[in-house]
Length: 66
Ligand SMILES: [Zn+2]
Image (cartoon, rainbow, N blue to C red):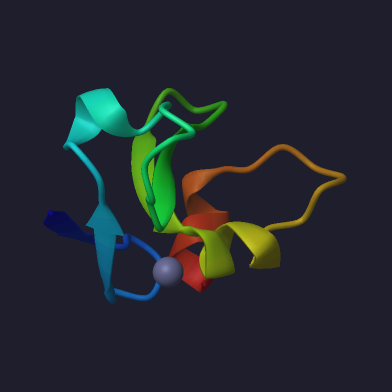
C-alpha cells in the first residue's frame, strides 16, 4: 500500500498499486490525479475533489483554495 499527500489538504491518501493502479476499480484508492485546464496535474483525495465546483473549469487556484 502506498500513500501520497493530497495537494489540497496535505493528508496522506492511500493509493493502491501506485499510479498504475489508480484507474483500477478493484483496488481501494483514496484519491486521483486531475489534469487541469491549465496543464498542471494535482493529486487530490476524494474529499477535496468533492469540494471542487462542478460547474466551472478547475484551475490551480481552486486547488490552492482547498
Ligand atoms: Zn484532500
